[in-house]
Length: 186
Length: 186
Image 1 (spheres, rainbow over the protein chains, first blue to last red):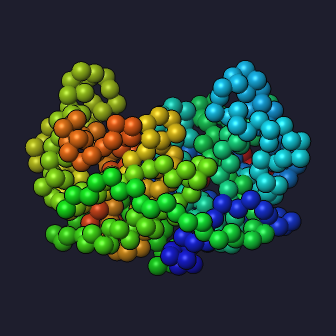
Image 2 (cartoon, each protein chain N blue to C red):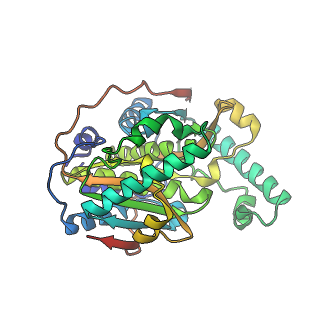
Image 3 (tube, rainbow over the protein chains, first blue to last red):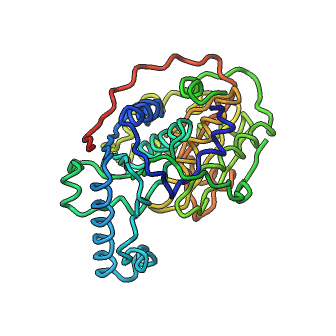
């Protein structure tokens, strides 16, 4: 696909067809994403592939429970705005996607930027192959039991939970804010 | 350009032709980058365009001086490994690029991921238009005087200094590490 077309086709997808994603296709998207640059070419990142609807649902339930417990402890937290939604038993934070790929980075300040670049490559590659993704902020914190089940290492953290599947439809591009150009010299 | 080709053409460029970048082309790259997704569609980012070799050189000198002062204060810092290079008067941390575009985010933990996604779009769009970029970690901290001159607002921070110009050549893709797949379920 032409990059100029891909810019319009890569949209956050929140509705998926009832169709599984072949593991080979996921591996192709991952292979593409490895072309992402990284600081000092360290490539300090990791992938967890959950291509199983039951596990995705349990990850959603665990994430909701964990965040609600955090809101209970700290009612003023940023997450409190999601309380009603998270209390809805039917809500699947991963939009009932058949697959979620978790992109992990090292713990600490160095662990955010490189995996974010990688995740961007992943989302663009997936769209070029006819797949849809959505970066699910609410999916970064499943409970300790689920983190252990999916194999999150102690020295890494989930940066980008990307739900993945065949999109029901590709929404139009909403209007962008004008470029916030703070200064132009030259 | 086809996305599959772009994956190989987007390389970190450290040598530039002696040719200026038209401001209109920079605006086109910025317009492309605005298709990047952001958390809650907040689009909380900003651009500073320095399309002027003299200012780029002074930003390089200021960044070197500022980092060397930090190393002086904290000899065990991560930056100490760059001490010899930064002491070289001839070194231009921006690789003598004719232009640097600074991508800024909000201060704090929320200010890293979204501008990193935006910067990734910027680098890919630039490569699709025949331009080269390199994300210059050493360029995030020019001194306070230069920050004021280029207009860094008090509530924002430089996340990605991207040098920009016409590449002398596009290096081959170095071998990637194999995908670090921590677990595969399904």
